[in-house]
Length: 139
Image (cartoon, rainbow, N blue to C red; front, top):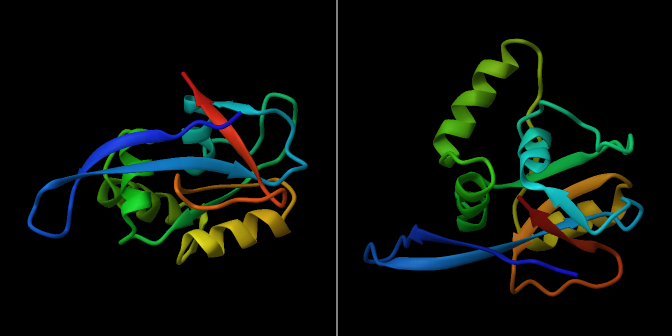
């Protein structure tokens, strides 16, 4: 089961609104087909690295300029990319590290497919195969 998370964000061209939808993907070894929105936010903010069943998750973000990251940050983390970046700047002073960043949907998919426990997000129109698993974000 897959779920596309839709958000309205400002377009870089002409300031018109554009819809960016995302899907969350995990390595196939990660159990389950759903993740709580709060848990997903906690993983990407470094508050936890485990699911309730003990599965360790390794988050991967997209670039700071990516509209997909903007949609994820606003929709899942409930804050703009700039605020998340500032959060991580403060956390790095405590020797905590943000999720690694990949430059494209394809790079995220390659990372997730190659790393057990990996979790990331891509544009909903991005083609996926059995090397990753789409998971539904639930409230």
